[in-house]
Amino acid sequence: MKGKKSEENLRHKRTVGEYLAFLSIKYEINPEKFLVALRSAEEHKISRCDNISIQCRGKTKNSFIFLIMRESEVIAQFRMDKEFLFNRSNQLRNFMGNDRIRRYLAKKARTATANSIKDLRTGMTHINLKVRILEVAEPKRVVTRYGNTASVAKALIADETGTIKLCLWNGQINSVSVGDIIQIENAQASMFRGEKQLSLGKKGTLNNEVFKPQSKSMELPAAKN
Image (tube, rainbow, N blue to C red):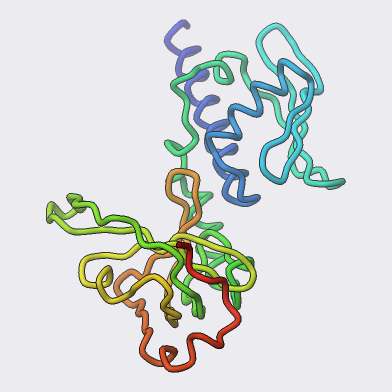
């Protein structure tokens, strides 16, 4: 009986973790801040995280009931085990690979379009944007999942609606400079350690030659000094 109960608890924990991870993806909530905000709501009755509010609506000996709202819209209400909530080793990024999230992102990518940075959503593909390079971080040497070493750098890019990080690899890094206005084609948006970013992947391209003659007149944010 004890072994069976442990299996049921583990299955329940996994379900809660996957559901919270799904909410963080769907409503673009920082996943680790989300857990912290839930713990805060348990203590203070209410808390905020990014664009949502969290209320602790009830307690039992072993669980809590949470209500999640975005402005005046109720987006979720669920029960969570006390053990899961206060287990500090729980991290929502460990639940991001579940089938529900993959199906949601695949469906979203098929139907979504973006013409500016503010319109970008996690899971979008075939993204085409005209942006200015504001910053380029120092490259780092990393080992890829295929066992190869590569150089990677994050560039901060901007249009008139906002900013986002662009992940550059190897030769892409030296192909751009701070102040350049570039055209990005076939990029994809993803979430990395709770931060939204763009990457070019195998099919994506960037081009800065076409904008160089008129770059001074483009109405995009100026590069940072």
